[in-house]
Each structure stands twice: as C-alpha cells, then as structure tokens.
Amino acid sequence: MVFITEELVRRRAEHNNMEISTLEEVSLHQQDIEKIEYLDKWCRDLTILYLQSNLIPKIENVSRLKKLKYLNLALNNIERIENLEGCESLEKLDLTVNFVGELTSIENLRSLYNFKELYLTGNPCIEYEHYREYVIATLPQLKRLDGKDIERSERIVAVQDYENIKKSILKQQDEYAAKRAAEKLKEDQKNEIKPGFDGRWYTDINAEAKSSDDSDQKQSEDHAETNKNIENKDDNKTFWNEKMPFTPESRKATHQQLEKERKENQSTKNSDLQPKRQIRLATDDGRILNVNEAKIDFQLIDDEKNNSIVLDVACYKYLDTSLIDVDVQPTYIKVTIKSKVLQLVLAEEVNPDRSEAKRSQTTGHLVVTMPKVKEIIKAHKPKSKASSVENTSSTKSNKETASTKSTSTKRYEKLEAGDTSIKNIDIRNIVNDKTQNQKKYDKPSPKISEITDTPDDDFVDDPEVPPLE
Image (cartoon, rainbow, N blue to C red):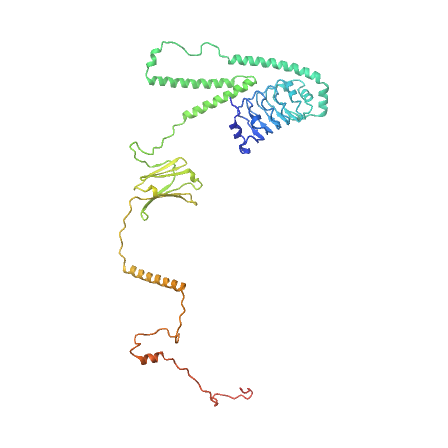
C-alpha cells in the first residue's frame, strides 16, 4: 500500500524549488496511491491537483483546499462523490473510468456555485436511463457534461420532468447496488482460505533423511526452486487468461499481479547477472600490483634532469576535478577516477611530501611530479679556455653595464681646459722631450689675408654694378 508522504510531494514540487507550503499545482499520478491524506494540511494553496491512475477508493481530506479549481481523479476506484462541499473554488471535476454507481451523490456538488464541468465517462452510472437529464437538472450551475455543452432547451426539458427522472434513477441505482453487493460477496469467497490439504505431506517417515549430505539437500532445494518458478509462470498465465468482471477489486488485483511479476523479473535478472569481479590492489603477502581499472592512457616518465618521476594521466577534458583522487606513496601511486583505480608501482622511492599534482586547463591531463628520495651527485666539469674567455668578457660587459648604470644615476659636470678636440693624449714622453710636445700641442695660428686695393688678374669691372660703400 502506497501512501502520500512529504518526500513524495517535495519530489513532485521541483518546479516550486521543493517548497510545498506555497505549492499551487502538483501531479501525483501513477503512484499506486490508495488514500488521499495530508495534502489539505501541507498544500493549502493548491489550485490544480492530479491524482489519476491510482487505486484511490474514496474522495477525502480535500475539503480544506479552498483555492482548488481542478481535481483529476480519473482511473481510480471511486464509487461515490463526496467530501467536496468545502472546495468553494472548484470548477472542474474529472472522474473518468471510475466505479461511480450512486448517481444521487452528485447532489453534494450543488452548493459549489463556481462548478462548471463534470466528467463521468466510463462509470456504471452513465448506463442509467435519463442519466444526462438527471445531472443537468440536479446541478443548475453546470455548463459542460462529459465534454459536451449543456443547452438551455435541454435544461428546461430536464427540469420539467425531474421528479419522474429521479424515481427512475433511484430504481436503477438500487439494482446496481444489489449487483455490486453480490460481486463483493463472490470476491470475498474467492479470496477466503479454506482449511484442508495445502499440497504438502506431514509425516515422520523421512525423519532420518535429515542427516543426509549437504549436496543432496542443495540439489533438492534447486529442484524445489525450479518447480516454484514453473508454478509461478503457470499462475501468471492463468490469471491473465481468466475472465474477470470490471470491479474495483479486479483493478486492484491487476495492479498487485503486475507488481508481483515485476519483482519476479527483477529477481531473475539479478540471479542471472554474473558477480562483479573484485579488483585486487595487492597480493596476499602485501606486494603492490599494477592496476588500470579505468582503462585510461598514461605516461610514466623518469626525469633525470630534475631527479623526479612524472606521471601524465590522460584524464577527460571536461571531467570534474572533484572526481579525481591522488594518493602518492613512497613505492607506488594510486589515482582514483570516478571510483576507477589506476595504480602503478614506482621503480625508485619518491618523497610524497614534496610531490605535487597539476591539471591542464587546455587538455585536462593530470600531471603528478614526484621527486626522488636519492639525490644524484653530478661530477664537476673543468672550465675550458674558451669558456674562461667568455666568462671574462661577460664580467667585463657586466662591469661596463654597472659603470654605465652608476654614471646614469650620478652625473658630474667637469670643467675642461684647452682645446676639446684633442682626445688622445700621449703621456709617455711628457717629461723627456719638451720641444716635441710643445710643437705637438701648440695651437696653429690662423692665417690672416691682407686686403689690397689692387684687383686680381681675373677681375672684370662692370660699370653697371654700383660701387661698394
């Protein structure tokens, strides 16, 4: 038996952020619910309620839903319309394919002044003579019945002959009630367990057989289980081939049979499945094994230059990093990707505390760098002459750059004497040969040309040119 629970309602209220106190619409169809409860306390603001395709035998616990406008109870086991007087805003009621035989119960809807549509298609009451006329005359506010509009002339005719129609309806209703009582009695007798032979023998003849071997006992159990499966299949076949009346009990029995077959199929599937192979990460004596349960590509590189071991795992590009777990041990590494293990034994011992793991943002690869415990001692290489020359030149250049930097930072102004055009000064013989130095550093005397009145030989006196003053 399935009940309406808070968890079920919250799961169906995803469109309302799982809040049920402000819920206005909820669908609880095809849940095999057998009783309406708690909705009038948890969801007071409901306007639309879907409860079709369940096993509900009675309308109850909805009278407090003052804002309810549409109630769908199609394909249930309802036999009477009741407990809807408090639903003041109810406009539409769907009771398609139920077992409503007491047609006079629609008088409970007369006080609902907003009520407009009613669906009773597929119920026993529609087989009554003058069924439509009776409903139209009983509910004056109704505008649509079984998907068909109610005309004014039709209502006038129904109201004029209402008394005779009601007597006919009551008579047919009593006949259906007697028929329904006989069906219930027959169903109770069918389900009643009578004392007697149940197919098993109770004797003490085989009392000594209890001490038989376990193999024989197991074989008998297997044989009994196969016989039971065959019997269940035969029972299922006879159930579906048997003719059954269309009653609430038969509908409930059909649901139970479907649930039983579903469980049987599930149990057979589980028994046919092979047990999952257990992944061994180590042997019985503690030796670590190489395992690639994830079946993922990887590269294990021995980086001698940096004295470390690098593991490159080709993780999926869009795999969330929270689904990856890395465990570095001195002799092995274990990477867990979505509960799948990649375990590798290392050739040398590493330092787990100094290890680091990084994830590429472009490819998604996981790179784990594990420094080795044993450090490699490298031999000192003697420096060659070329390298020494290069070093000296580099030191000189460094000094020059340093001097330029210092001069750029600190600038001094110097007073220069003499001719600034003389740059290279030879100070080797500054004392020995004074005459030579005197000649070398004497300033050349400028040539002075005298102006004479006598013209040059090439001079031509042009009379047209005015004289210079």
